[in-house]
Length: 89
Image 1 (tube, rainbow, N blue to C red):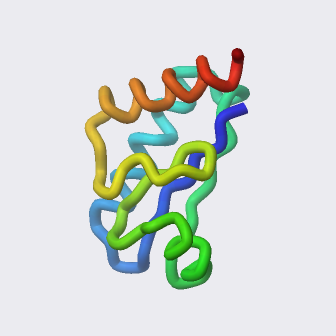
Image 2: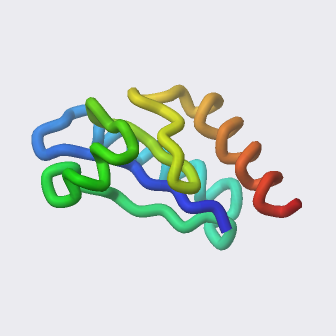
């Protein structure tokens, strides 16, 4: 299973869009293959800093910061597919 985390902050306009894009992609690609959650950087500041999150929205896949801003749907899908194939091998 691929672990996906979307880092958000209160008042972040693009963060809501990031959650929608991620939810739609995961649903299309197979929700059972992905474990995703929203991480509020104010509540989990130390974890966000440890990963290198400097702005929101940011997306980490399998504990690695992959996107430091909102990616396009195609970019996110490609990253998820790449991590999915890694976890299957």
